Image (cartoon, rainbow, N blue to C red; front, side, top):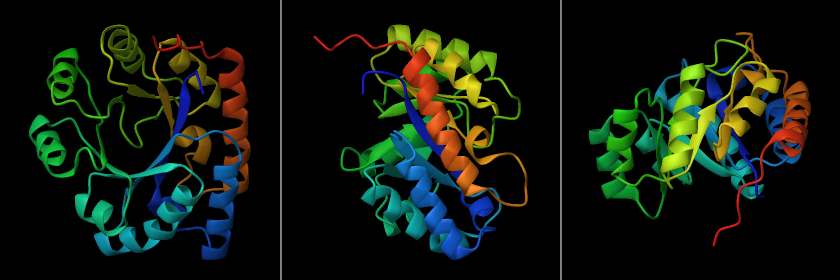
Length: 225
């Protein structure tokens, strides 16, 4: 696909509030609903053992669907679950350690990058991607203007792909695509912002809607030479 692609940020703590049978069925529906490049699993409020137990079936289901599954900020769980990669924060020391131990067998990315200087320092380590925005950071309907500006700057200068976090409104993916980012991350735009769980049927419909928006509005990338 030669346009900006979708990355799902999945708060496992909120999915835990959905009954198990409905959780897996609904997650499968989300994965079938449209193009998804990867899913990044994080836990806003779970102990490590709970996170691992709940994320395991979600990770394997994503992988069976051809969607790369990454764990945010927990290398132990990423290893135990056989995840495709690990997403860290913006600390260069942490990123270097992960690159040394995991790359290139596993994907390694950085997130929560807030400045050009930090982005360039991380980029020197050659991660698989940098992300402007962080899990759960989409607290407004629109994408953060600073993240859009960083994504626009990075995409114009650096070959390493970037992910930019959209806002809570699905329409905000259009602004991310137009900034030149290779990937748009969505969290509340797909899964809602209510703390009492997730409507996965509605989430699947939103995945379809977002892909239609990207098909219609996302610029086409130039073919590699």
